[in-house]
Length: 275
Ligand SMILES: Cc1ncc(COP(=O)(O)O)c(C=O)c1O
Image (cartoon, rainbow, N blue to C red):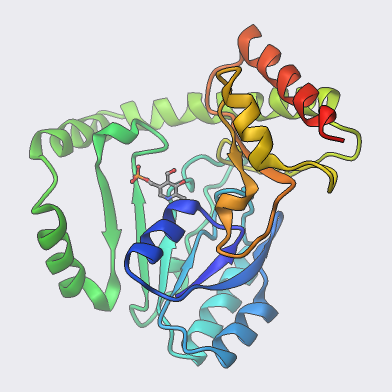
């Protein structure tokens, strides 16, 4: 299975549980998965599928421009490889237009578009969807053997919320909130973290990727921060190789508060102490 790197650790855990070999493809924080590297990876490995987050990846927040999505689709078709597209952050765009999913270019059913209300309403709803193209029957069977089904009462609740316009209204307000939270987190991090710290600048979602100077070990920072009741996701979680030791992903989904500002200050001090 090919994945972006860095990629969401949940994918890596799933692939490990399934005993699948992972091929990592470099991804940039602005335009997403590198197309040349994807071509090389598919040409030189026996890749059965690509797991990709084209619209606001976790952890980078990168969004592929339309022309890159089109090119990626062509590469997949050339090597006859399907893509599992995770579009979970797609509704959380800050600009006017929602980014099109890779699925928009899918003419032969090779893209399995997956998403959920986990990032927009509540993860505990466990309501999501999949448009699996030519894999519909296999996905149906897997869904049945894995969970039997999703509680109807939860689906009906979400469906009513969608139908009466509540979801669109809610999206408009959380998009604004996340945009401003990302801004406040970024400003505060740049003020308190070690000199030379670099940040992603996502145009959607609510996660930041933070790269600190090479001397910082974010696994150690993670342990130190827990003692102050601060939770971060160290960079090492986002790869199967030994990478991103000085990076971390920050979840900026909580509303801004003095507690958060103090926590970021503490984190910055703990990181500086390592240098
Ligand atoms: C990229 C990505 N995909 C999937 C998930 C899991 O989503 P769900 O709660 O809908 O299972 C997460 C949660 O963090 C995520 O970041």
